[in-house]
Length: 464
Image 1 (cartoon, rainbow, N blue to C red):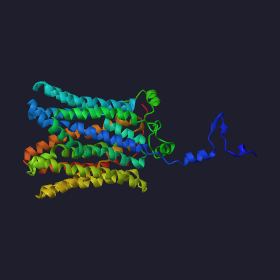
Image 2: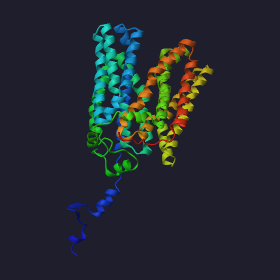
Image 3: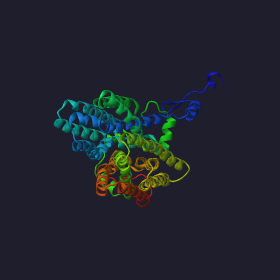
């Protein structure tokens, strides 16, 4: 046998050369890349900026209202603009995601909400009456254009992560809302004090625009990403990742998602239970975002400065709990527990911890109030697995529409919670009833997941 004959050569099958056996073995044994971690890091950063942009007016508001002569009623209307638009645009945003894909719609969403954020810095050049209308319109547009972001996050996690890692991935991007409070709130306060309130909007707007172009370089579908190898792709696909979710040809051939599918979603008992649970859990979120600092000042007699510092403690606890909840859920899956047990256990335990806030009605020490509220927000973080559940259950054809409907139910609490608590406080003169109301919503979430949701599994649509 010649020396040349002893060297492995390519085998020809149907006219195509295949690699030598040794090369095939080496490729099969290659360590998987971890591109999906880069993807979830990018989702974390964008979600933090998302929540920071929602909070810009909260930080700049006092100085802006003083300069523009806006009273509390006018500022209240301006604050409400975001919430109404955000809820109204969830379903259209989800439809666009399913029709055109996560990468494209997220890019345009990020760029446009950043432009509308930046433009708010220029209202200082307008008269008071015009400024109110302009601010309202710009805040409305921020809410409108931010609407696809969370459903997009859910779709991307569904595509990029196997089931056993999806809880942690969803918890990571969802926990960015707490991170935004801890990091961006002090930064924006410093910018306001140093350069003026307008520069908060300028800086955050420019930051978002820059991140939009970074996004286009980072995100691809799993099968198209230039950095992923076959080992990681196989790990994702074999573990339940929907790697074909954003296949452009399939989306085009199907003509986009059909809104008629909404009836199937709303008539599904499991999904309805999930939606009710999310509304109840989001009630806790909006209590901490809106009334908690007021509770510390009016209900506990703290100074505004002290309340501002103390309010960051539950946010940090919520961040830790949020990540931990996802880790626990995925650990349970890897230990062999069913998807239902793995997702419901952190939710139920987290909501039980959140109900501890009622104890604040019976204690006087400030440190104890802070400790109880930190425990409650930690529990809220642990139980905030709704987006992981959406990624697990959404029909693969309409992940965006399903996520939009889920987020519509959840963020309706952003409209109702501040109003209900306001009436409770005004009627009783204390926050005791308000804390009971919020804790009762945690109980509703528990009951919904235990008695309505049933088995957690992906929904199969009936053809229309």
